[in-house]
Length: 114
Image (cartoon, rainbow, N blue to C red):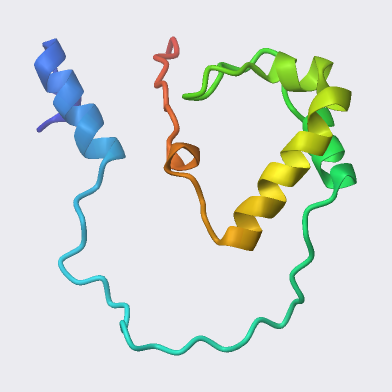
């Protein structure tokens, strides 16, 4: 498809799809029997101070993620949330579970004037 000659929405959506969603490789080149070396760093649980620092770096007016929680909630309610977020993160590491919902994101492509 020629990206300079896309005319209708169907062609545009196909072009966006091809641009942002590459096909899966034929061979993943990962040896399923590979043994990884032990970690050189000792794992340390996330601290409340690390969560606080991360919250202070959030941008105020960003679009919310799939959970629809805006950054303003974390910024304005940090003192109430940090302790609970810490427990959630530490439990996630302790159990070795990364919730499927955390793996999802939305990418919005904006057309900028040229």
